[in-house]
Image (cartoon, rainbow, N blue to C red; front, side, top):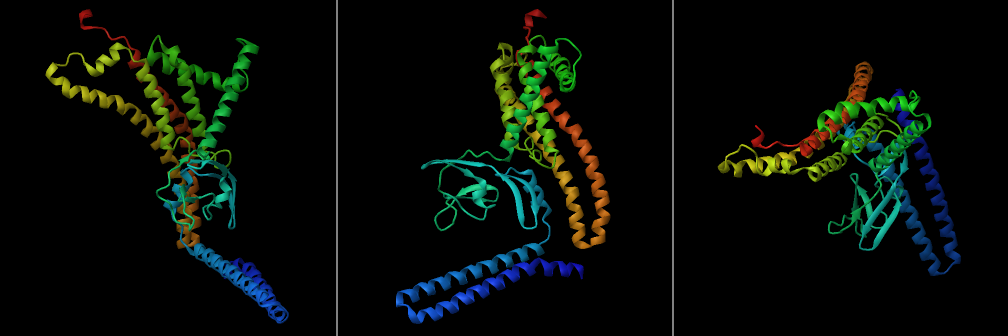
Length: 395
């Protein structure tokens, strides 16, 4: 009974407003009918068009309420909900209050034949409206024709600052603030005991230097240490922000395969540029391999060279995304079982919250572990590139 009352009150106010609107429209129509006796034929045509517009507005409002009522009866689509939460977006969603979405609009930047178009994503009204010939369609910007249909032949570049891009800017700003603060502390205090944020950052820097860079690269580690520290802290900070469910957290930066791919390409480029003669000789002229076997071994070595950045990309992307999916999956179980039975949903919520709490603590470990693994593998690749390969005459 209580559930029925909630439905009644949910549609009571919109229905009452529509009744008032219809009453107001009827009054306008009645006034228009009286005035028709004192106006010319042109004025009569104008009133008829006004009546038609009012009727269309009422029809649109009724369709909107029917759509909301239909949406409220739809069952929870857990898969769609999870994918929407881990995917990139053109606004930063804060909360949903009733039917109102509270979010921070982000800049949309589109380069097409007409030039550069810059506006806020709020112009799209969460995908319900088009603006300047573009609209949101399933989380992506598409070009549309004047009749609202998608223009598949349109060519444009989407340079928008999406949620993941904005999160990366925040992470970079925080990383710069931390590092400049620590550097300033060293200049001010010298070799004094670290304090505050310096006491947290210094052990991590020493760990990457002594336990990752030196053993993997050798005597030339200092050349690669700035890059290794940068990717470690960048991945670690973004992983930690991804575990925060509210702004400025909640963005799935390292769970985006485009981001992890770019980081892996940087590692691949640095490895290739710094590779010495022995490194390239090992790929194109593997030592100890008979000449007749080279046509088979060289392609395998080349595939192995390109396989390294692919492994880096997929490992980081898959581990971070899997953690988010598991946590959201546990939460979705509460609502799935609640749709079957309210009491069943309450019972499942106890186990879901317990498992989610456990997974959240596990994700704290994964956030550090994945940053460490990416940095370690990168340093191993650098070590192989600069390693001095001794010729067979030495042995």
